[in-house]
Image 1 (cartoon, rainbow, N blue to C red):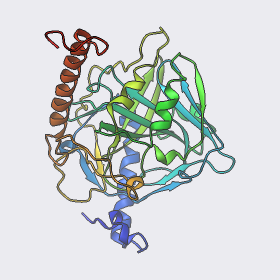
Image 2: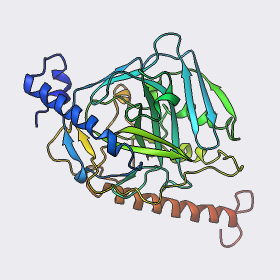
Image 3: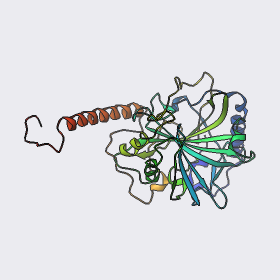
Image 4: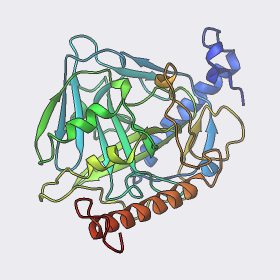
Length: 345
C-alpha cells in the first residue's frame, strides 16, 4: 500500500494519480456502506486485527486553534458537554471520507464507576478510563438536530484517555469546572482556550466505521473516526468526573452496552496505517501539543506496542485500585490525628 499521504515531509508534493484514484475509490466505498451499516448499533469493540487497512486523502482541520469568545461546561444529567462560540469561522473538518465540510457542534465525555469501565467503545475487549466524543454536523444541514437522522449528517471523533502518573495540564480547565457542575442541569462559564488543547489532530492511524446510537425512538446514524493515539490524565483528574450527579441525584456513570462485538460482515477500517503490519490496537506517543514541553513521565510498565497491551493495562489498574483500597482501610484504622505510638500502627 502506498503511504505517501501519511508522511509529513511529503505534504507539499502532489500525490501521484494512482494514489489519488485509490483514495477516491475508498471514499466511494465508505459512502456505499452508509445505507446499511449506518443503522447497525454503536459503539463496538475495536481490534486492529479485524480492521481492513485503507488509504484516504488527508483530513483538513480548520480553526481548531482559534480562541473562542465564550465557553460553557454543562452537566446534562447524562454527560458533561463543552460548548463554545466564536466571533468568526467556527472549527470545521474536511477531507478523508467526509462529504463536504463538517462543523464543530459540541464535545462531551463518557466515564465509569472505576478506571476499568469508563469508555463506551471497548479496545480488544477492554474498556479504558475515559472517552471523549467531538461531535460535528455536515454544513449542508442547518444544525445538528436536522443532521441527526441522515447517514453522513453527523460525525463523531473519538479519543481515548489512559491513566498516567502525572496530571495532564491541558484537561485541567475541564477538571476544575466540574466542581461547579455537580448538580444536573447546572453549568459554568470557562476561561476560553483553543479546543485543540483537549485533543489532537490526525491524518493517519485512525479507525473508521458506521454505526448508530439510540435515544428512545430517535435513531442517529453516525460516521465514527477513532484516533489510535491516546490522551493522558491522572487518577485524581479522572475521579472528579465521578462527583457529577445524574437526573436521579446519584453519581453519574456510563450504563454500558451489553454487547460491543462487531456484527458479522461489518466493516471496520484502519485508515492510513504507517506500517503494513500493526500488532497493537492503540498507540501511545506524544501528541503534537507536547512537542515543545517535556512529555509526561510515566512509571506505569505497559508496553503499548504489544497486542496484549490492554490486558496489561487492566491488570495494572486492578492492582493499583486494590492497593489504594487497602491503603484507605489502613488510614481508617490508623487515622493520622491519633498517636502513632499505639500498637498496630
